[in-house]
Image (cartoon, rainbow, N blue to C red; front, side):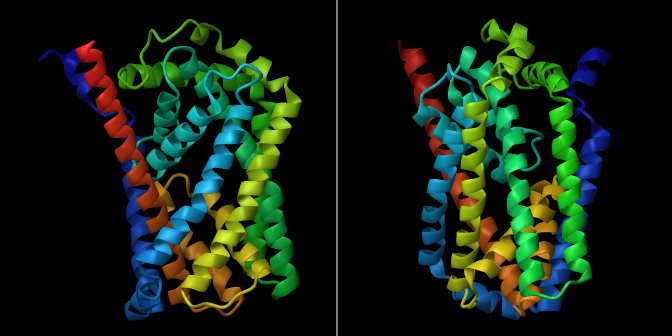
Length: 342
């Protein structure tokens, strides 16, 4: 084997992967410590009160939110979308499923979601719109986290925790502002990323899929000029974030915890705000659990119930993700068989 071939077989960015493994190890250790401090028996007892029927209810409640996010993605694709509305909704399901079920794959959610849109022009515009949609989704998170912070200040005493959430909100605002200022550079960056993904996973993102990829920046600028569509996408994402508070309320109620909707908003908004900065940890392991424990403690909710709520949320996402990827795999296999046959 030549040296060039050996270099091609080496993993890309080994330092990044090593750092990811270290972050995952620390996150898992934080989860274990949290379970031990809360009491493994108490956590298990809280989970037993959910039952499988409760988990299925949570999955069903989450479906409309993913559908709305699919609508928002299509709004971010411009006035000439490359796929139907139903295709964008399905691609959003695949995008979220890959992100949750395949946490070690960098940009795996976006790559598989874009691939689910189709081929050719759909892949190019899908990648561009996914990038824009991601920025809009992050921007819509700001008012939601702000509402959670204000609710915390109104319902509970001001603590170091509220200051931490304030810093997280400010940091998120800085990130969003930086992305908006550097939006013209995002197009060039996206073009480079598409080439990198195409080189590594040619079956997922073929290099010769369409000619639109040659002018990524032009497509990017054209979509950014359509402020009405982007504004409606922002509204849809904000609605999805707010519905997350309702999901949190249902999760705690199923676990036997009595809390109000404002308290659920404060807890979920806190988790959302702090989880933003867990992107370096696969699946935000540890970050999500600690966020639940800190936010729930403000309202006197036991740590065991808080950790159980985090585990339930992970179980819901994993169940939905594995099911979605299974359906996608069967569909791809059927399409391959049809191409071979005809």
